[in-house]
Amino acid sequence: MHSLNLVESFSEFKEFKNIDRPTMMRVLEEVFRTMIKKKFNTKDTENFDIIVNTDKGDLEIWHKRTIVPDGEVLDDLAEVAYSQAIKQEPDFELGEDLYEAITLKTFGRRAVLAARQTLISKILELEKDELYQKYSQRVGEIVTAEVYQIWKKELLLLDDEGNELILPRRETISHKDRFKKGDTVRALVKDVVNKNNNPRIILSRTDKDFLAKLMELEVPEIFDGLITIKKIEREPGERAKVAVESYDDRVDPVGACVGMKGSRISGISRELRNENIDIINFTNNTSLLIQRSLTPARISSMEIDDDRMRVAVYLKPDQVSLAIGRGGHNINLASRLTGYKIDVYRDIEEQDFDIELAEFDDVIEPWIVERLQNIGCDTALSVLELSFEELERRSDLEEETIRDVRRILREEFEEARKEEEAAGKAKIAVKPSADDNPVASSTKEEPAAPTAAAAPAAEKDGATDGTDTEETTAEVTEETAAEAGTEAVKTEDAEEASSAEESTDAEKTAESSEQEVAEGAASEEAEKTETEEVATEESVENTEDEEKSNSEDKEA
Image: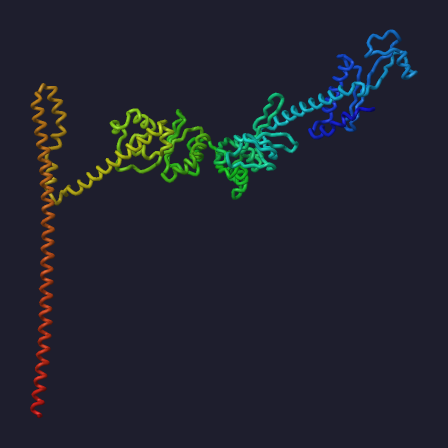
């Protein structure tokens, strides 16, 4: 029969949307029953049979009525008079069913166009519902899609079936994810939202489960269940820490995840834009877990406060930067992985000189000092050794306040250190030794120090016994005099030591002068001797010349 190829016009649409055959037949049947209700103004369509062949695009509608005697027709849609029935087939008898074909021309052109629009809308709704149901079951799985369109805040992707997926910018790996149209993207199905019957499939590349699924694909032991991922913490594109545990003692969880020469973990890192991935072995030992989570730094010692969920970690100065990491990512990930707030301290040897923080009450507000003491900074060095960011994070002080405190401590500390060094040098220069100066050792035996120490006791006794203030003053005067005498003795000792050094220098000078005089005399004697020898030689030559001249005169 002629069906205006209505079904055939939707065959291509059916295949593109991947709608199964029973569903298509059900939708078409519903559309045409709606047309029948409008055409015949009835709510009951049981007397109409609709046959749809989705493969060939054929459509048949049959109207079934029962043959009744003439004049006894009560319902025209369910019954037909005998005289009308025998016009189509003379062999009909009363009580039989008469089937009459209904073509689409019966409904009219407008009804067919309305049916077409209804069919399109129903198929779209069905396709959206199918898409929502499909991806609702795939939440947490990795999908591969192609970039179709790039917008300011999100990317539109198409999967293998042409379904639209959304990748928001906030779910990409910061500035490292740069895509162009046609690129293939792997991402995790994070959420499926059905808003106004319009499903939105949200993808993510920054979720922790994305890393877990990548490891499951790359590491067969995780896929088989021999190794389980206990916890994952990520800073997308920068660093990630993964705690793994093995249920088989023969399998090393860290080695299995890393692979031979890092072959397994390197592929995952490349997919995450060269994200540094630290694989650690999970343990229930809190201190050991904290130590492993701070890799590659090596911890010297730690103090764990389970009540406050904080831990103080002490490291060598060269390990502090490794523990904190670039941008503080390493320590933040370790803190989130272990559940403890980690405070890093430099483990350095005790300094010869330091200043208590309480001594700065006159230049620093007391509440600031108290705030610093509450975070464990009791001395000037303990404050100066912490970085500016660490002080700001732990003390919760303003930046300007921290700068002023560090400046004051640095200036006071350096000034005090210089004074201490100067005082130490003066003591070394003035203090005589006990062997060279017996007066110093004897001075030590004098009871001057006990007298000064007994002053508070004397004051206390005077207050108790009712002694006059003048007696106390006299005692203090005597103590002062004794101290003055002690200082005078020390000064005399110093002068004697200096005079002894001067006499020693004079003796050395005299000895050197005598040595120089002796050397001068020796040189003069040597010169005289050489002069005498020269004179002797000259006299000998003169004598020989005279003898020769005399002999020549005789011969003449």
